[in-house]
Length: 152
Image (cartoon, rainbow, N blue to C red):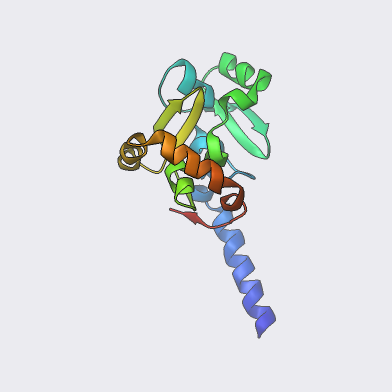
């Protein structure tokens, strides 16, 4: 009986990970980064721009998409410059000790780093004390990174 329960749980997990929704979610160890948005565009256009599947690069087990070939090449040359903080999870959530999904439109650039948030409402809270939240998130990220659960 126990073996059947584990098999069912594994089957459900595999089915969920194969769904179209899961393919677009942010995961630090796989999937489509920033829900398919171009990480370089945040820096050079100051906004979220959808990337194109044909302009993709895999980095650290994540596939990043780019709106223009120039952006893809900039990323290839210096990926650390463009990668979102905290594995692409919500920075406010990490400051609170958990992983949370993101809205690619809810972002901020601080000291040359890209921070993503769950929603524009959460981003408003984040903007109220960026240094405080960054300090908390930096301290908590090593432990939070180890967790599998993502708040949606």
